[in-house]
Image (tube, rainbow, N blue to C red; front, side, top):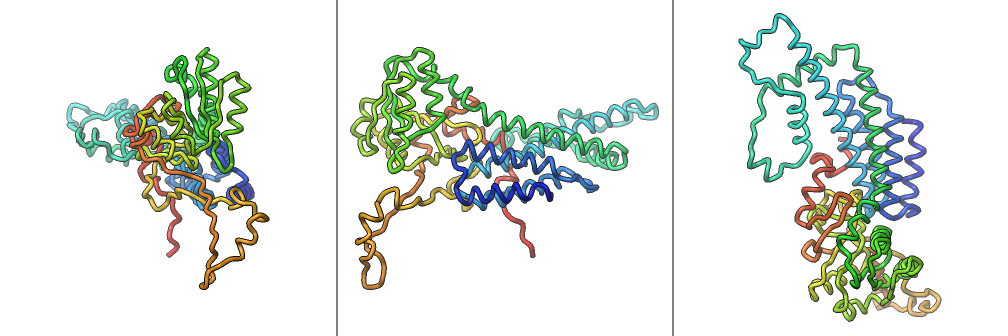
Length: 414
């Protein structure tokens, strides 16, 4: 992929230097880059073109994830694209099997009365293949539906036949075209995620309610805008989100739309929560267990909401749904920002020179970026597919990812 490598290196550099931040921007640019990777990939003569294409995407994905592990949206999109490749390959295989079955049925020498093997449609084969992509659920374990040996025989026969046909190049081009089109749909989904989420605002926010949020989230902003456009009358308390004070920006944006807004300090959340009807916040990532990685200070807000029995609602697009769990070693829950957000180096330069006898500094500054909010503190998730409880998130996430792609890691070179 000589034409793509400069794009990959450029994006890797942007991720390392934090030139691209925010789940939406990161997810969209990752999807665009992977679409270019698929478009420029040269489909060779190997039997399994889908596997070769997935390897190319995985190789690029490893570089992107390593460049900025804290941006979990990168890994989410890489896994989504890998899942798309598998889905399109399965669909193409099902179509091939269906065409093969039609050919066999039209053979005059075929006598169905003497064949006791069960006939399987392409739809059944595709369903079994899709189930193989997903982690087993309780429902599939209870159903315990045996897969007939005819599946493997038919699939094998179809594979052998496909390898001998002259339409291999055509099917390869179709696979590549379908994957590119599906990635385009994914990009459209990322861009339009705010609309289906905002449509649910009128059902959640009622007249004369008081809403509390922290920092600035575009998803929260669009959600509140939608409620205002539906003539809902409500008031918003905005915790400022120190030390970057993104809440000040959100407060200004809400006022411009005519929303009654009150800015409060982060430390005043517990003092003000008793006046609040609902907490609505955004998220950096939603984990498979229903936990949330969110801007620092969010866990304090969630604890305050639980203490006063106030619903804690998280709004997030599907590109923020992460198939990993917080305890996975691949997950970076936090990173430390510059101490200059908290202290002026000029003002505290004298303190920086003090140290103990062993040489360690007396003054240390810790500036974490994120908090982890456990699922027990979350009341409801609002996504572009609807409202869901934290306990349902793992099932929702399973629809977007394949079980064997949950960990994208570099292959050993031994």
